Structure formats: C-alpha cells, structure tokens
Length: 386
Image (cartoon, rainbow, N blue to C red; front, side):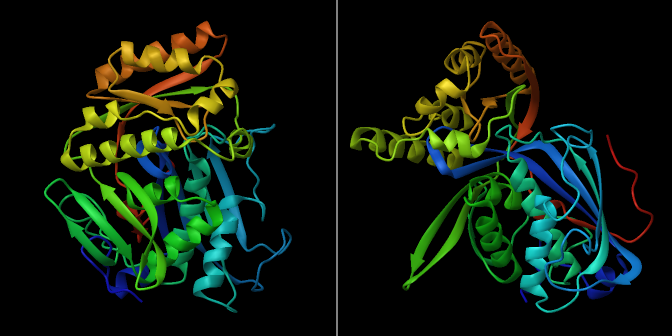
C-alpha cells in the first residue's frame, strides 16, 4: 500500500470513524483540438456521490446480479427523471460496474459490504463532457475507500491546492507535474483506463488540471504516465451543449483508418506548442494551438453548424475553441468570466442559426480532480446540493 502523502494522507482512526465519504468528479473536455485520446482538461461542473456504509451487513460476494446487488442507488439531477435519459439503478449502471471491478481488485473473494450511493449529477451524458469518466472515477474511488486502500488528508489538499498522487513526481515553477503513480493510484489509473477505453477524460478527472496521458516504456516495461499542468491563475471556458446526444461509438465510426503525413505532422506541431504553452503558463497560446486535422473535420457532419460555432467563438474573443471530446459540445477558452459568457452566447446563437438548440455556460477550467477533493464524512451526512 502506498504511504500517505501531502495530498491524500490520513490517519487510520479518521478513516475507521467515517461511515460515509463524499466524492466529487469534474466534467472534462478531451482532445482540445490536436490531442486526440491524449489531452483532458477539467471543468468546474461536478458530479457528486455520497457513499454510505449500511448497517444491515454483508451480502453474497462476487459480481452479483441485479437481484443480489448490495448497492442502493439514489440519483438526483441529470438522469433522475423517467424516459430515455433516465440512468439505470442496477448492475448495468457504469458507476456500480466500476465499484464492483475495484472491489474485486482490492478485496478478491471478499463480500462487498452493503452501501448506499446518493448521486447528484450535473454532467449530461452523451455530451462530450466526460460523463462516463465521472462514473468510472467515482465508482473506483468509492471501492478504494470501502476497501481501506485510499489514504486521505482530512485537513485538505497540498498548499498549491492539488493532489500529489503516490509515485515519482517532478515539479517546475509553472505547476507542471510528471506523474508515475504507484500503489492504489496506479490501480485507479490503470483500471480506470481499462474500463473507459481511453485515458484522456479519465486522467483529468482523477488528477485535475490539464493532463496528457501516454504509455511510456522504461526498462522494457510500458506503463501509463500522466503529465499535469495546473493553471497558476484563472482560466475560463465557454461550454455550449446542443440538445441532442452523440454517442462516442458513432462519433468514432466516422474517423478514417489512415491519415496523411502532412496532417499527422500538423497535429504533432499543434500539440507540442499547446503543451509547452501550458507549461509556460501562457493559456492564450494554448487556445491558439487548439487546431486539428485528424478527427474534428470528419465529425463536422455529425454536429450541424460546428464550423460556424467555432468561428463565432473566436470572433467573440475566445483564445481558441474545439469540439469537446467526441461531441456534440463545443468548448472555448477565455481569459475571464465575462468573456466566457459572451463567447457562450455567441456560440449558442451560431447553433441556433443552424437550427440547433443548445445550452451554454461559463465555468473555470483546470480545476482540481477527484483525488484532491475526496473527503470522509464522520458526522451527519450532508444535504444534497442542487
């Protein structure tokens, strides 16, 4: 087990007293243009899960079916209402699947304790804002806590406001971290990627900030590693979400099997500039590099008005804009809240001109991830926030 550290350390007595915990997982925007399946950036829009140990004891172990599932689920907010948007409350719920997978990893052959999950959802599914990663991360963090594998510091995160997961880490004055997680943090990353299928949203949701995930080979061993940049100041994002669902599988199905050398080199150049700009703390230049030729052009037919929306964002003062993940949301970076609100309005108008209804909001970007915000609950359970 990894030793407690500055971000997530806790004494055993505190963990033993806690009968519940609060898990907050941020929405994320992936790719940012050139970083296909690599980059993720957190947004100040959180799904919250209160995990409570129930006193009624244990149920049968293993991967239970829906009849023997020792998990009670209450869903509030997005996905709570009936109809096509209603989220499942049984073994087919992605959060529950991640919880069970994590429990089997950390407590093989041991019965899962009865728990109640109260989920307050704000991230819409099928929107390109990392809703599936919020579920996977919440389920895995819940399992790690239930299994007694998650060190936590009740006093709060490190002095810079960010988690420092166990493992080697190098830091520069620009708040750049190179993370090689160990122990439970390695498990969270690897199992999360296995469940999610790609690392971009997942790494950001776990560790916070802007992340770049890559499999790096060292001494013949390949392992996932994460570079993370925490903005030194405020960075804002305008996020506009069309009122239709675009499944990741559909969005990926239109991508070509091969691309030209010219387009590949273009993307590598944009991605390199974006990452170096972020490390230097120049987020205006991050926005300037949000250009892509490998995936976004092929997805234009799936999102009516996309090209006009991107142009409108820049005309309204955005540093840069791109399709968020697989879409249909569009994200634009801006220097302040007022600019982000103006950009969001301009993008909504552009969507409306294309016959697409969309919602818009301005949020901070590069905010902390789930590991930095995890808290045990030793007193009364909090009332759900709206």
